[in-house]
Length: 354
Image (tube, rainbow, N blue to C red):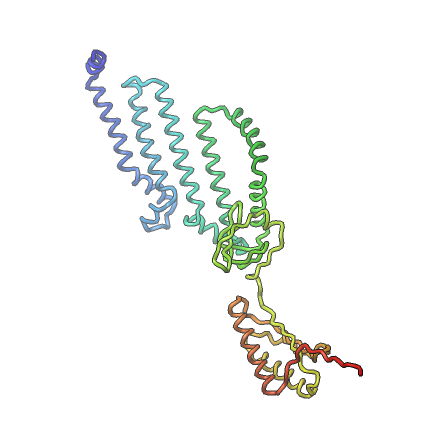
């Protein structure tokens, strides 16, 4: 109690005024932090007229935090001489100011490299169309990781941690980690290969390693595929980079192929008429490429006369292709019926000697 009484007696009017000024500095930066941040961002976005867009900027929040922390730090600096604040406390205040500011700006910078940011849209517009969204998002993830790593090193340096010992420790730890997580490392490197080669992108229909479905996401470690049974399978990128991949979405056209075996005793005139009518039917279809149509008397086998029917259709997706193939089959069967041509069956004639 005696010490408190002595401390109270030592307080003068000058001290009270200094504390009031310091509180005023804190309140000023607290109240006007948003306005100052708005003005600074507006200087860099002269063409932007909407206040909401400026406040949604990636750096608006970090700038507000910076000015609030700056107000506290300036207040402490102002009170250093009047209140005889020690150098140790000032050093703590300075480090806290640097660390919080670094984290805030790192968060803002990383936020500007997200798909929702305006910077992302501008960079995306200037890049070539060959750069796919999955590849672009992968690069942005790497950029954000680098930003946070740099911020982390700045924080560690500010705290006075010896980086030489830390780097040496990380080197030894890195060797241990690599040995313990070789499969993960393989998947990460394979993920980079997948993004560089671009064998598929999100939304593509692929077939890989006995799995078939639509690509939903591509991450550092694996690729998520939604199968046609509506289940989800995560395929490690190390597997994808070492097996053959069929990308059905890259098909420009599909092939229709049919081998019809007609009875041996069918007159050749009827066979020719059948071929001509099938060819005319295929040529009349909008989905069929005319220059790809083949209707030929292919081979003669033990059961009958083989007619090869082949063409390409622009019905690429599976459901429309199945519908197109079904309709062609119906029309071929109708031509066979109209011409009274019978299909041959696998038969064998056995002759017995008397």
